[in-house]
Structures are given as structure tokens and as C-alpha cells.
Image 1 (spheres, one colour):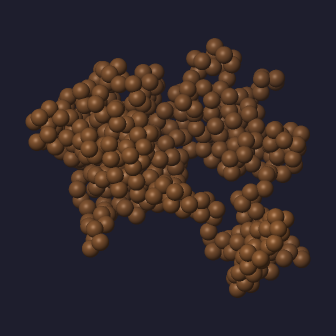
Image 2 (spheres, rainbow, N blue to C red):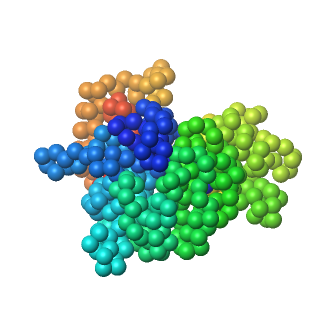
Length: 440
């Protein structure tokens, strides 16, 4: 699969040739990541941090011209982040802010003095990092220029052969990111023979970057067991994520086991499983084209978009392939029941979605947007809702038995949701903050 790349420099999204010459520049990072998120993971790289263009304030806090943009992107996709990460504290903070993984570059490698004694990795740092965030969240860059490991924003090599460095690095990482620097941004293809040697040398997940410029090359790398991190080819429309997603699915296995069809599981943004169907390439093409989940009907042998007759369609937010590339998870917003029986999902007989904070929040939003006669919710102004939150919190504390606690908690959560809506705060943001505190 393709991991889309957002490289940040001087507060802008850029693409560089050979890590030096600026080829393009954009200032719409939020829009870019929103589009990339439909198809898979995103890598966000702070090039200024990698190049040492940093600012340290009086409290010792390090930042760059990209820091605020980077933070805003971390919760907007399945993000891995890299660029100038030199301490376990930095890495842990990025994880707490929403990054799924961190990419470690120069800091992973031994100093020049240690290399003279045959040392390859900065093992002390990597062990500390693993203790802080876990090996599963660590990606080590094995960037190379002419087959030698490159560091410091690709400005120098360290005399460590790529294969030797990679074998050592995978002991401390769940993934390796290989960039063929001399091919980076040149749109002339990567060094496939070197990739093959690297793939044979290591067993962990391997992501290839630098020069990949065609759908055919993406598919070839997928068959080798490599993912691709791609930037320039996407920004210049030479390669499209839709095509990469579809072609990287395991169609060979689908032909052998499911008549050429890929199972697709639809789940709501709240995580409730709604239905399961099957899709061929044509169905995926239409899903991406119209934004509504589309399947192949095995009983009628026709393409069908969910809701095309009932109106109860599934609006697609993002698609993710599983690790074997033979099943797809579609995150959707359901517009009406998902089951032909009228049930909200195909796995219950309930006509409505399960109660959740998101559902309650949405109902409250609808009450304010389209107030009905006699609606109590619509009468709640800022002052009154705060008074009710205080009142209900007190009643929760005064509740004398189990049933009373349940009742009062329900009241409190209702008014809390109203207050959150009025302040523009979502449950996603609240849960993200709780997650940040857990990971801190």
C-alpha cells in the first residue's frame, strides 16, 4: 500500500529533489491530509527539524516553523511523524499528541567516535526510546546515498553499508523506511535491485521511498512485500492513490477463494459494525468516484451502490486494507438503516444506532439546527446550560443508590453534551485529550 507523504518546510508543504531543490510548495496541509486519509496512512516529516533549523525557548522547549501545523495534522489520519527526533521525550510527546509511530533518522546511528570502534547504532538511545514508547511504534530510517547510510537531512553519509545497518536497525524497530536519496524527487523510479537485496536481508515491515513514480512500480514493490511512501508522484498526479489502493489488494487470493471478490466490512465512525458485502475492482472504482459504498451483488451479478433504491446510503470516510490485503474496512457515515430489514445494522434488529455520546451529540445538534415546537433543548442558552451542569453534577454526588446514580448521570451527560455543542467541542477532541494523557 501507499503511505502518502507530507513534507513540511518553513511552514509550507513542499517537495524537494534530492532533498535539496524545492520543486513545489503548498499551504493547504489540512486539505491535503483529508484527501490522503481516504486511502491509507500518512507520513508527516518536519524537514526543518531534520536539518537543524530549530528554535529553543527560555524553557528549553524546541520548535520549528512547522510545529503548529504538524500538531494539527496528527489526529487527522493514521499519522507517522519524523524529522529531527533526538530524544525519547520528544517521541513520547508526539505519540501523546496523536502520532501512531515515530520515524527516527540520524539519532538512531552511532556517533563518529563510536563508529571507529565498530559500533553501528546508538543503542543507548534506541533502548531508552523502546522503553518509552514501545518497539511497535518505532520506525528507523535506513536512508542511503549510493548504498551507504545517510544522516543529517541527507547531507552526509556515515560509512555504514545499507544492508549492514538495516539488519542491526530492525532489532529496535517494527518498520524500516528506506529512501534511495539519489532517486528522491527525480520521478525516475527507485533502485529496485537494492530494494530486493534489502527485502531479503530483513524480516520486518519495509517501506520504500525515493523516486517511485508509476503504478506499475507500486504494484511490483507490493508483490515484493514492500509498502511505498510517496510524495512527488502524488502531488504531480503522475500516480493516483485510488489506483494504488485497488491494485495493491490481494486479487490473486480473491480469485482463488472468493470468486475474485474482496470482502468489505462497513463500520460507523463510532465503531459499530453495520454490514458486510463484496467488491470487485469496478465496485471500488465507483466507491471512490461517488463517495458512497458500492458492492458487487453475488446473487444478481450486478454492481450496486448501497441505498440506490432505498436512499439509505453509506457515505465513505476512509478505506483500509488489512495486513493480508484480502479484506477492506470501510469507515462510513450511515444515512438511514444499513440492513434491508430496516435495522440499523445487519447484526441486530434495532431500528436505531446504539446509544453513544456521538449519537446524543448529533441529536442535540439537530435540535438546535432544526428546533421543533416544544423542544426543551432549543431553549437552553449558555447561562442556563451551565447552571444545569452544576445542578446535575451536585445531584450525582448526592445520589443514594445505584439507580439514582444511573438516572442522575444520564441527566448530567445530556446537559454536558449541550454545553460541549455550544462551545464547539466534540467527543472526539475530548477522547483525544484523554488518550494524550494516557500516553504522556
